[in-house]
Image (tube, rainbow, N blue to C red):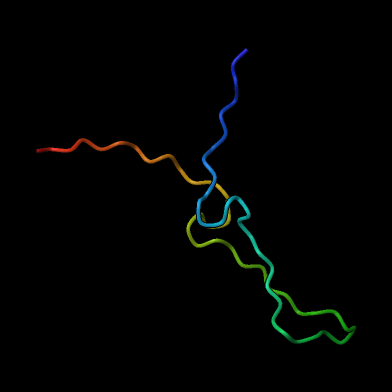
Length: 58
């Protein structure tokens, strides 16, 4: 049976593609206001596309 290969994990976010950051303010019910922020390198997917090897001309 073939093994499933996983896509390479983004090295900038280590697979945690979206982080929630508090803004420091509070809502009327007392909870903190938060913003979800996606990783810039992988655009929120947590994985990166494998890089194809390029030929080097000497």
